[in-house]
Image (tube, rainbow, N blue to C red; front, side, top):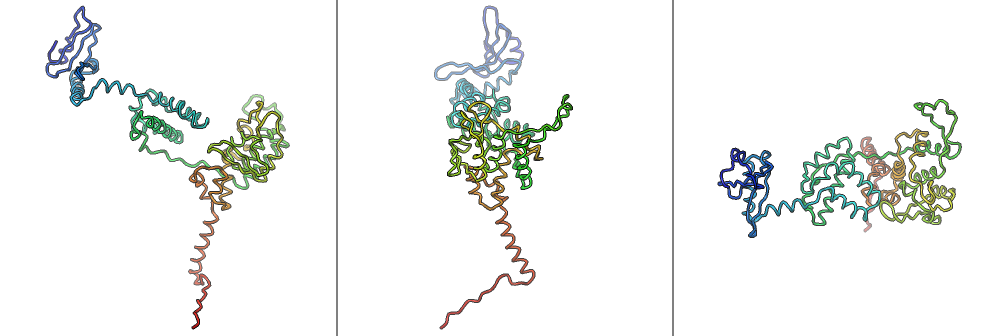
Length: 423
């Protein structure tokens, strides 16, 4: 059937009994048609020939599309055919593109699980589960636009660190897929999105704070720390007010080692006795956040290790409750100790920053501090450069001294006359 496709003509089109559908082909635009089905549904189509085959592609249902809207779509598709493009093949190729969720799971299983550390894998998995998959999981990768990501990033304004980590992870996933020729590296939609400013969270303990921490550690491993009664609990008034808490000596030793070495928490907790070289004063870690790493032991750190007993059947310096396993964390003892020492808000990782800050203040040089901390990049150590005050102070004294001498009309330096050569 052929005629002018208009709203009146489409509304009047009915599939006759004994047929599953009937077509009305437009007399003005060749290849543009509408089909009426026995169910009453009516769908617009574009029909064309490519490579000697007749192809038909659905444009949309009547009601959702007006005849004029369907005609515009048909013109566009049929125009593509004239340029050699097959719209059906193009649509199938687009549908074959994986969703972000599919690519993200492959990225975790094939890349992160085999080439990154377990903590990195866990963190990526958390960011995906909590933030990225709910937002983009069902979207095809090519459908994710820069504007979508910008809105997502802005929505996490109250969590600036998490927002930036999500951007970095999304970009990594895209680039990984691009290296497998699934996407274009140049089309990465994360490019050009400005990250949130991140304020450093470093906290440096002062000498007085270290003094209080030392006193608290001595109490914790000997007579015990005063036990704080939680007044909000029903039975708290019946508990003895003189009760004291003695902290596990291995936990106290771990904190001391963190103070004296500047090592990361898990580097100390997972260290084993067979990695400790007392003669050279080094703990040889076969693996760390930055790969193989030596932890250099001062006399104070060696004394801590020398005083620790070894638990039979457990190779770890800081043993845990499970047989043969290391201690998993220091959250509870650290909370008790910092509360007793009045170091509210101080994190265990701040001990590492404090170790570096004392080294910088003593003008030991950033390369040395970086080696002690096990930094793989000089830029990581550069955060402590502002603490290296002695060279700056000496420079300020020299400059100000010269200016002061000029102000007071005093000689800036002794002038030694040059001797003339005798004839």
